[in-house]
Amino acid sequence: MPILNIETRHYGFVRGSSPFPNFVSKKILVEGDSWAAHPIVGGSLNNQIEELGENDFGILDIAQPGDEASKMLKPGTRQRRKLDSLTTNELYLSVFDMIFLSAGGNDIIGEELLGFVDRKVENPSKYGHKLINGKFNGAVSDVVLWYKDFLDSLVGTPNEYAKVVTHCYSYLTPRPVSLPIPPFGIQFGNGEIYRHLHGQGITDVDEMYDIVIYMLRYFRDQMKTLEDDHDNFVISDTLEVLLGPDGKPDMSLWYDEVHPNSKGFRLVATKIREDARARGCWPD
Image (cartoon, rainbow, N blue to C red; front, side, top):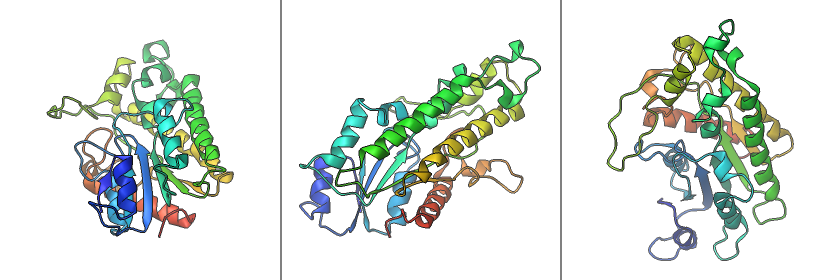
């Protein structure tokens, strides 16, 4: 079934209006970053979710590469208002069987990374994650708060019982990556984490890896606390999905520094379905 990104077309599609007959029984809303909708890797998570839905999912995709949770979920922002309108607006309203979110990665390991890690030259006795400062904890707390606010905002709406599913990304290896610049001029995953950490005086890749795995694990652990108070919410623990037999990220499953390739995304999506089913949040 098609993945649509215009509300009016999705509205017509799920109701069987022209030009699409109504062949689906499940309605899915996807909001997220480039893990949800990568402009180059054709098999990113929205495509994988569609395939795992076995032609029974009608997907409305409003994800945009590079977006942060601070744009998608923070109350009052343009994208959050759009997200709210899709769950409450009577004109284009769909009662979604699942709302899939991919948000937070750009907030914690994007450009803000420079402010989260202290300079090595000023802290020579500290190694790896010991260089992470309190600004990082605060940033994660903000992301968790925005997720919570969105989950709470569904109460009393037609989508009060919609299943909300997200993930916690995967352990990755900071590394410079040489990629051709695509025709539209936007470059993704070409070694930003490596460059930022190297700029902080951290030159050892193992030390960089120690920082990244701590950040991603902390993000997962804090997000997991939301499951206790929201029965319709699951954060899939995808951290170790793309590890090889040696316990390190399997480079054959990655397109660039921060994005899996189609095969990697398939493994991540399959784990998301497994964890969502375990909590009754996958629309079978």
